Length: 96
Length: 161
Image (cartoon, rainbow over all chains, first blue to last red):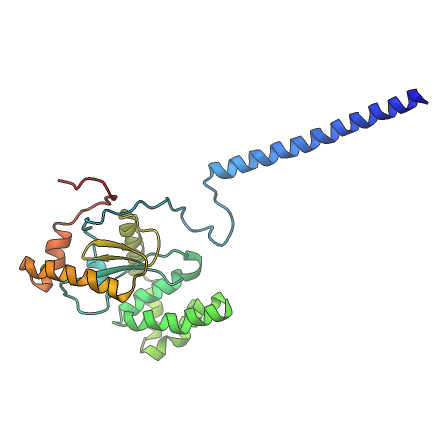
């Protein structure tokens, strides 16, 4: 009887060991997939999938006067107010 | 002045093209306000993105005096796409990645601000502009484009020579 119990325990442990190996393999596979996604820059398939990955924005120098080109916007009429002004506000905008 | 930065291209690219096409009919401001009122607001209330679709825009475009056939033709032509691409490139050069963002005579302002905040900056810029001796017609080209910085400079970075 004692021999039978020992054999049963040995067989159970062997089965557990096999199960653990299967789980470990699955975890390894998942880790590989996560690493591959990170390497691709986290491009998922959600609503923002087409949006370019945006790097964290550095704060602009508060004293900088940036020469933002508005000639084409003026020509195309993307403007509210007079064409010539002492102060020009450029708005970066989107519709959503 | 309005520069396109299409943050959600899968939803509003056609709306931005329509904005450009409306501008070609001298109706950008009307289109801009019309979109928020007649497309975006219904979308917000229903969460139905088709309210911002081309079909939805075309349904209210005549009410602000737009010629729908010309609007469609300009939306599909090369000029509006080129403008939107050029705007995005120009804004990215100065590392603008979100809306709304502003440049007031070249000074960057991140995000929305109350009217008093805008007024303070505009008043200060007006004083500088008036002291320059340049006319309104030449000021932006001469002082901002001519003397302004051609690439992004981060806070704390030295001024270019």
